[in-house]
Length: 337
Image 1 (cartoon, rainbow, N blue to C red):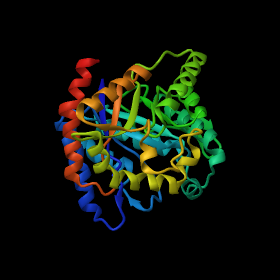
Image 2: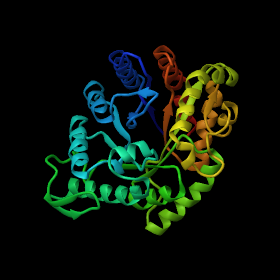
Image 3: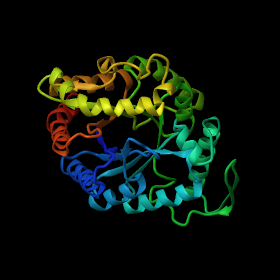
């Protein structure tokens, strides 16, 4: 079992981002010191009411400060980008991290982002597929000729190649069944999102397995899942302490429209207590350990990414969560697994 920490780096408008960046980098240093396997950073644009430094420069700094950590771009919104730019930027990151990059990819769901990059949600599926295909070719071939819907490669080459060949592992994040089938067909694994209910994931695991069978592929050797988590003396205390910042986070998701692209019955248009049902890992160390082991038993996952920091949460509280998890939950899970 491996464990990662998601550093979303989403902070309230008005905060001094120089201070918040130092805190996010301190979180990465602490993750390395506590023995976590990786740090992850997502990507959004026009992310009001939050502010966040962008993914690639942040991960480049983490790679320099924390050489023992894998760095996970989790996820890059492929339909927004041109493949040659991504191939060179991410190959550079793989070099900076000495071959420790994971290329997480997703399709996105926010019209404000699609419009700003000159595309639409309708075109996101084809753009995702051709961009991923092109990036992988640029990493593994000397020269690439390929016509896409929004790019043309004419004997183009990636100025640098990643250390990992034929390229860093590709984790495909997906909420919907169509994305899960795409993950089976095009990715090295499905990166299971933190939002879907566990009952939904049980159904979707069958979708994933059938798609893997159709592609002639086995279950992935590295199979990651992300969950929001909070540890306290009791479940009631964990909910009470997490609620102020986690509730703000999911209110923003609703405003951004993420709940509109979730599977039926998994939307976020409900109060906080209902949102918790069958979704997050909250409780005492023993309770959270049991919940993580249940994820392993039910879904076969072997890489758990903890989301333990949300907008407005004090750094000390976030670091305390990471320590509880590293010292109480992770050893117990590994011993039982």
